[in-house]
Image 1: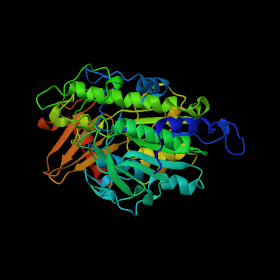
Image 2: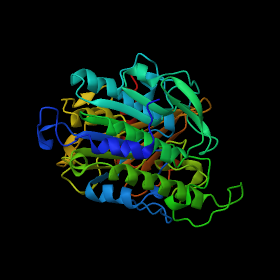
Image 3: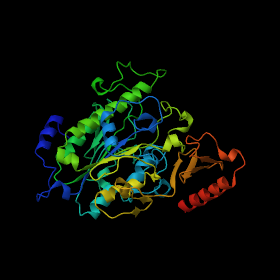
Image 4: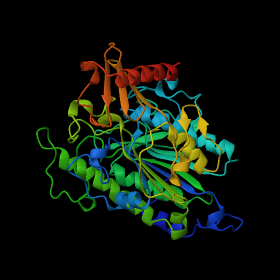
Length: 428
């Protein structure tokens, strides 16, 4: 069992130098640590720093990360958990990997981000995926380490029925676990990082704030004395409490890093898709949230801070979740301006530059298939029924007025033709 008791892990960590390499090089000359934090079902309406949503959680640690770095306003993921994780870890759109819906299985022939970095840096990085995997259906027999990841521990399946009673997988073994998942994943992360003597890349995937709505430990949230959740209660306070508990645990993890290690770490925070319909907030509509290619389902939070992140504030570049593959590879020191469907936006951490002319997303849940493409101003949605929708996001950012319900202007007609042609080109 690789997991140790939390206080022992912190003691171990104090004996590990993260400020120097084994040959004594100073922090500035070694590759940065990379921390990728993935939140589950966290839309822009549920986090500070974005205008959507009136009710916001108290998240001082996430706020601090965002305020010290740069937020990306036009970042698109896929509308559900599994496909987004697949696009990040492969740099490929879902139709290329076959991962287009929840429960789809990522093929073992795919080259994953962790293996790509290891193979191309002469194993300079220690790599781990901790938390929610959700790339192998419900098969607990899958070992993510077989994909070329150094260490995996967490939740193979996509969801839990109970945050306090779930199936924990490590060392190819799955057992019942009664620890609060958000806290336990953080314990695992603290323990793993404490054992590293070289730069590390940690994929820390919380299952929070995904349903089931529940009561986190009281000291982790500010939502007061919540009753046990039952259908009919307003789920919003429970959802906010789960976000706050995640923020509390992120802060606890960061507090275990030495100043040198923290200064040498790039922190990437991202939501895997939009907020679920039960708690999505205005101006979004519940029927156009998670599980759809509308903005509420795919335009998700992304912010980056830490080592070599010079820019502060916000950026409006068009970005895709696939782009994290090349970007993280370049943060790790590789020269990867483009890989499969991934375009590196590492340069945006230091200066503004146009990365993409178009962004793309898709879903196929077995019942409905939809595709969306945007050039920043116009967005085209195509459904397998043949129905199409066109929106001017510059004047209608929340997609209330389908331009195809009226006669198009010349400019709108040209935009439609342009996006249709680009969509066909992408999917060749």
